[in-house]
Image (cartoon, rainbow, N blue to C red):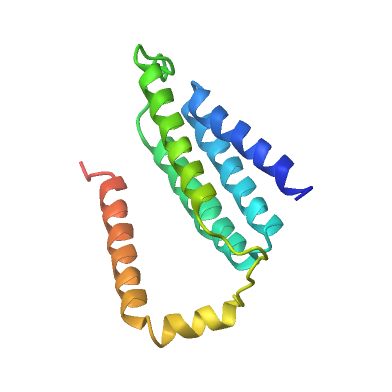
Length: 160
């Protein structure tokens, strides 16, 4: 708990910085920091496998993909991202309402008095992927391959 509270506060600060920055590249880099802090929170909660997946998939894959997307797109030098809008209070009200709903759901649930530890090792998850859930695993791999081919076709320069 001593490690989790500072991580959570840093995570909230980094998340707010993502939506408050005016530079798109800074927003993507701050998102990477947010995702790394999330992995740190998972480690503090003793969910090592989830932390490893968080680092590999989201921090490594998604942030790299977003950076390539930003760098490959044509930029207008004078364009800036508008951070403030006239209806910011609606977003704040919606966020507070969602937070209140989530807090109510957590506080009203009947959680056990002691933590229930579930064995979650990578070997068991791997066996499940390759036996019981092999169809979903293979379908996902085909979808990711199709998305990668589509991204290559879209990013490729046309021959003139």
